[in-house]
Image 1: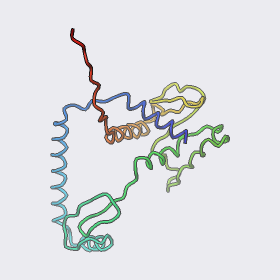
Image 2 (image 1 turned 180 degrees about the vertical axis):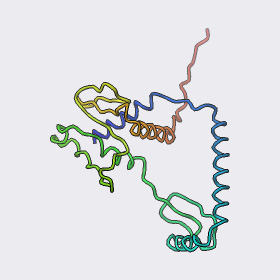
Image 3 (image 1 turned 180 degrees about the horizontal axis):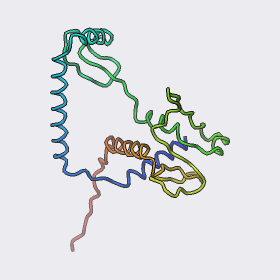
Image 4 (image 1 turned 90 degrees about the vertical axis):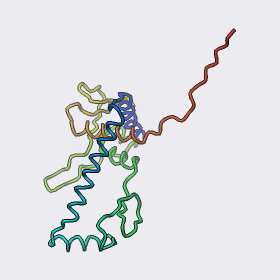
Length: 196
């Protein structure tokens, strides 16, 4: 569990770097326009379904328990849906972090002391081992070329600055954390200045 704390410390280092995206309305307007264009294009493709694909669509609708006559379906979060809705049950942010943390290269000493489970074995694909989504390395020596690094129990944990895919995944996780950050709802302190 302490190793998971190290991953959270890595996350905090990333959060303290900060980021500015620009005026909120410009981003929102671009997103709304892009979403509208994508929705329109998808609806147009659904209207012009080729007869050869129609049988496949009927089978998919039957397997998912969807209304066979409907042309639009709402996608929602959950495990129960109506005949005009597709429910998707996703992992929580904690479950995603636990899964990603299983591939941290953990020190042998920590495994021997039963502080942590061994690093998960790489999954096998048709072309051999599948690279983890993020690679976090560890050693006793401070890394020379780290994108982000944290010292924990006399070891350094880091993401190599030359590992573009791990840097992207780490940045994506930081972005998700920023989206779910509730912010402070505490009232600011009140300062009373006596006037003579």
